[in-house]
Amino acid sequence: MKREFNVFMNKKKPSKEEKNNIVKFLFNHLEGFGDPMEYILNAVNYALKEYSSFGGFILTTKINNELVGVVVINKTGMKDYIPENILVYIATHKDFRRKGIGKDLVKKTIELCEGDIALHVEPDNPAKFLYEKYGFKSKYLEMRYKRKG
Image 1 (tube, rainbow, N blue to C red):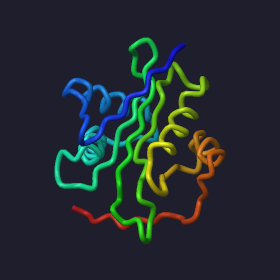
Image 2: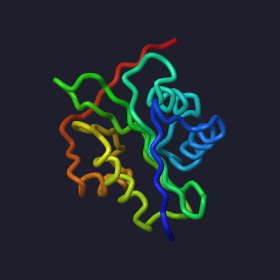
Image 3: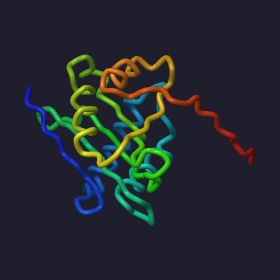
């Protein structure tokens, strides 16, 4: 099975159909670790600099022209005090898991990023082991204050 990687960013954007497929893919394959489609679209638009942002990139991989993995990286613009990049989303197609796709996506993402990378992962997410294998460490417990209304 030959895998084909593609990188989208400000200078090389996906078609409208490709972008919609990326958002739907993430929504469907992030499963219990995902967000509403609107949030996913916002992260994708940020990476593609569809509005004023620091940008980032979207990494996709296909097997036989079928989308089987996606990563969304957003640049933070804060390299002097937090990592320059945040891995916002990573997902592999549920029918293609345990075939090295996630591993290859993480490896390729590390190669493509300039600077450090942060990610948020739920403690019970099975992918946590993969991230640790590639050198990601848990430095903080994240806490968020959410405004009501």
